[in-house]
View (cartoon, rainbow, N blue to C red):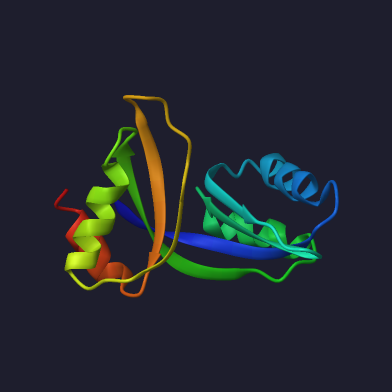
Length: 131
């Protein structure tokens, strides 16, 4: 479990925009630990958790996009029934709100990375560190 930086950008909802941006990140050797692309009509919000925030921000800015940055809690969880229920329940009992979350794909019995934005990231990270 760790607090990481998440970068968010707004992309036009057109073929190729996500591919162009992620190709530029790949060319700069930025690895994406997690990605969320939420669709809209004309624009999409794309959130990424890069392995190198500084380099990723520079690439995104060179691409001509505004980039937002926030702290998120990243938790490795077993890919099994009840994993999310345990985390959400623990945070709920502690009165910590989850603003949004997304996860990487895992393989049954393997692990997935859960990325969540909480009202109090530090408190959530401390609480989830005891999983």
